[in-house]
Length: 124
Image 1 (spheres, rainbow, N blue to C red):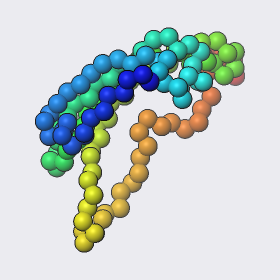
Image 2 (image 1 turned 90 degrees about the horizontal axis):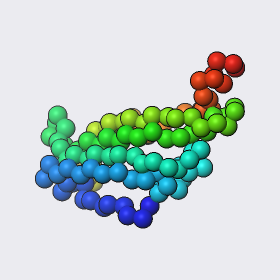
Image 3 (image 1 turned 30 degrees about the vertical axis):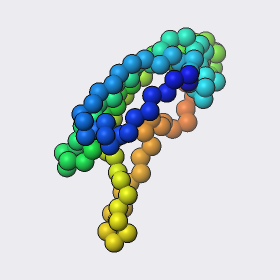
Image 4 (image 1 turned 180 degrees about the horizontal axis):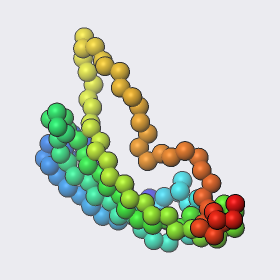
């Protein structure tokens, strides 16, 4: 991407700051190989906040429509992306504080899947 905004997440959350904008799909180099077309854009919103336990957090939302390629007929397949997540920020703990195990979760990941348009899905 030509311009990637950089923030300090802790300051952003403490200030309750907000930022929103759009990024062109053509700027996502790693995504381009999956797209039938890189025309269009993805909208995002970022809000600094604190979670229920008072920890600094970022509420992130992303919306847009990707033109994927049907894996059977290779025709364009519109795929709506709409995600909202609360990311709790964590600093380093002192070594004397025991860490509690947490379950790792990948944000925005999905199992490997073959994308198919409605026509191809009905005929398989």
